[in-house]
Length: 80
Image (cartoon, rainbow, N blue to C red; front, side, top):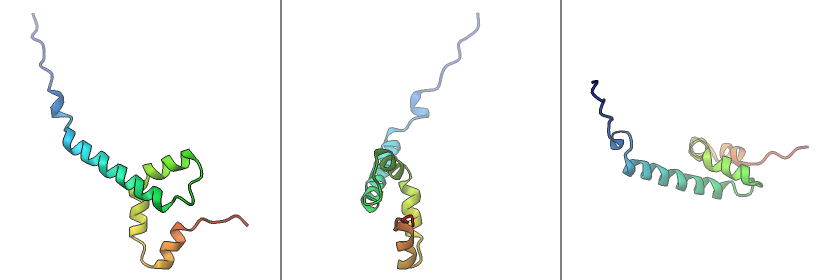
C-alpha cells in the first residue's frame, strides 16, 4: 500500500499579519487617491479604477518635478 503524501500546512503559504497590513495600506492609498481625484471621478466604475490603481497614481504624483507638471497630471482635459 502506498503512503499518502503529507500536505504542507496552510500557514506555510498564508501569513495573515503581513496580508492584513498590505490590505490596510492599499485601502488607505485608495482613500487618498479618491480624495485627490474626487472631482474627476463621476461613476462607480471610475471610483473602483482609481482606488485599484492608487499606488501607481500616487507614485506618478510623487514623481512630479514641478507644480506645473503636477497640475498637468491632475487636471482633467476638456474636449474642445
